[in-house]
Amino acid sequence: MIEVTVLELQSITEELKKSIQSDIVDVKKANHEGLVKRNSIKLSLMDNLTELKQKLNEELSAEYKKGEDISIYKESIDNLEEGLRELYDLNGTLASLVLPVKEMYKDIIEEITIKNGGSLVEVRA
Image 1: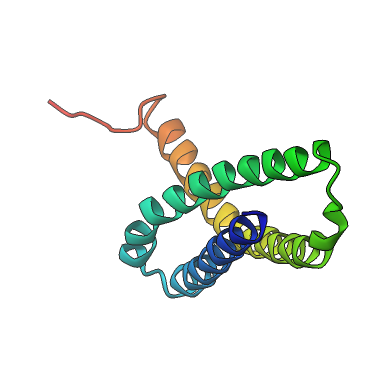
Image 2: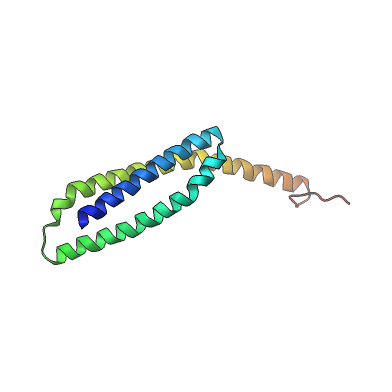
């Protein structure tokens, strides 16, 4: 059962990495539609990833309590951890592209608000 859970985790990790790589391309191209389409899918994958990580911990703990040698899973778990590190790095790359844009919009909104006397939208009657 542990092997199956690790494989499922690796599969989800790969799907998330591909999705984030596509996000990076779409951010560079300003293709917001692609980003929005993938967002709900990524959220679902992340929920699944969290649940499966908990399941894996429980399965490993149960095997250990039974006195089983869980070191036989070391290589596959190490590979999983490497994939998760790569996912983390990709996510950092995406954030480094998105956060400056967010700050730019924030600055523009603040500037407009100041010019309009504290209101984002100037209403003239």
